[in-house]
Image (tube, rainbow, N blue to C red; front, side, top):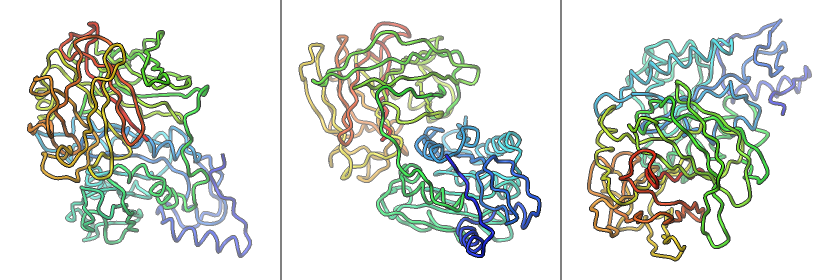
Length: 498
């Protein structure tokens, strides 16, 4: 696919290029180069100023996120000509100090990743897209670590800012150019407050009704980012649908929850899940065992079948983590940012990770997490329903999780929270559903919430259907009390991406 624009030396052509450059912003690379050398492979060499071209993009995530928050965004860029090497989405690791995120730790990792990306590409500048608190980390890198000499275009999405981080009083110091994307109120991180979305000296874009995650996944947001960076509209604006018979190349990483540190030598088994017309699911046989490398990475090819989604069985191998059964939808395009999260059995890492793990009671029941990546779960807009079945696939109950009385929100206090990771557990061990968010701070913090919900796992083959806005994934229930490798043991994580 062509990802460059050919330039005519006619008066019209020159005027057209000038118009594009005025929108896209400049990189500060050079003004006019009479003998330019194209080092990006996109054939944009000419006697006009080389300004808007495809560079490596470094993606910086925010609090309690990992690189997969950018999965749809990186796929959209890839569909428009960017190579995998030009899309650097990485995990910030151990970025907490106690119970607080450490902006300096985050910025130091940004600096390291940018330096590696520039060395690999040979370019003098990179583009950067930051989400949430990642914007603050990038601010620190720009102002205090020489980032303004390395960035061409900087995009902040759903971010709040430290307005004291300036160069000579300028919160958007040149020569790099800035774009901010914010919500008009659906984003609970901003609530429509311009202080948390716009910056003086930047191109500021507000979207109607988008939440925090949609600011890095929605088609309209992507189109603004692409045009700002390249100076032209993307040729491919829509994500494809999943196609049976299509083989997708998948790359990912096994990390622990919250802290994002990798698990080496972990076992990953992709298992096909067939959904019958009745809704019952069947676990297919024959998944290949994949072992993660020293940095937790793995890769495989997935041939999508009809009526299928996928389960990853992930096992640490040293009994330090609960077995994880991670269910996700079928692929729509190649992905290199898959992240498989594990929950440690004992302490270690940040306070948030320790407290979260300790708050999950274990016993003869199931623990299930529901995760969204490109749209947060909010009362009044989204519907999350659980339908439960016994081993004969006879219905045993149904419950709606997002109601006015039980909507999961940070701290269990509001009704319009940004929830992207929802823990479902029979917390009081009474074999019944509760009436609201579990009143335990460790299970209710920014983006992570809980609900007292009974998911029977006393017998194998109990099933639960998770329905998020009409998209359904079927799962088996696993005993949280089982030791690593035992039959029917571990936790579930049900992952929705679109």
